Length: 420
View 1: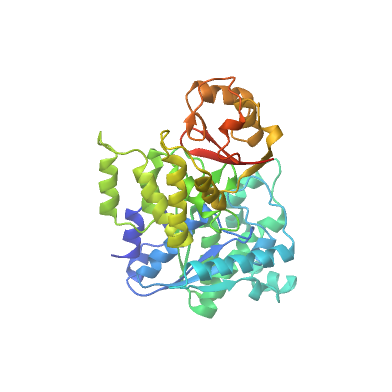
View 2: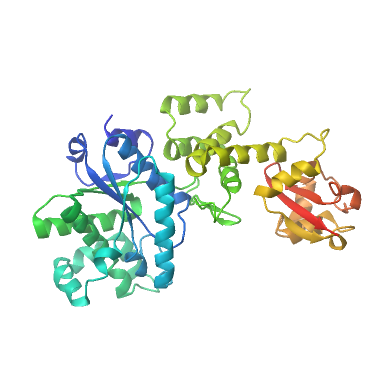
């Protein structure tokens, strides 16, 4: 199949800049996707771009991953209601290095060419920039782009620094065409204006037609962005988020989102995904089995088979423990290796109400929430339901005198290690 057909069927195609692109993509084509090094790791939203990159590869196209070491010093205004804080140069260099390492490890069997736009911008002076690039951009089209228009009309406005971002990214596209014969840029839907800026520049400088493809941003069924949890962003690197927590986030997604996420975040066959969707509507469907498959597929791709097996094993021990099979110290010590416990002194645990401990550990945001949790039947201690609002922790509740496992519902767990 043509790559555009694949992307469309999986919900990964938003817009293309030319009806001719499908025909062009019948042959191997050089393309690039940009990644913004504003942190030392990529997050779940970036995974869509990585998946799209791999689909292009699978169809025989030639990928370039561009890490914006120069443009990160400016900050992309796309989708932002206010200006980003400027990063220090050393932080950006560290972020570029970390993200490059991530790509080399993740796609080691099919590595893309990894580039840093700081390599061609660092030697360019302001005058060079204005003469070589700036003179080819007109204010009318620049101001009409949505990423600019919404900010210019806001109370905060937009700085000249941010305003030049589309010029820099436009030159990236032209440079890669000129140096590497890259004729296609792929990006999220919020990058449309930046992509077309590069297409316009190539047309003016070389009378060359370049192309663009955008994919939808990763959002939930209610329109909110995916990739945030109570602990913050859902990072793709284990030094920022453990494989277990990554697995758990996907294991908890709603039924309304799980099928779409299978299509956009995995390489599962569409026939299999359709079959799972039909099973979800049957009375004998086992709850969360679709989420389990999603979490397994994505975690294996990002963290590898060994880390997936560990995440699955911990999940089974934490969430499938029957009340007739009490937790043991050995089980909790194994869990503690991948789910770092919150440490408490024994004196601060014994005789404390469950509601108070739930708030102190962050399991609940307030005492009233903890009370509602108990009343609704969702409060657990060592996988046993707590039914009394005034329930107090005793030494007998400690697993081998060393651990407690708090639970909010059947999915959210918190491990406590108790010191003498």
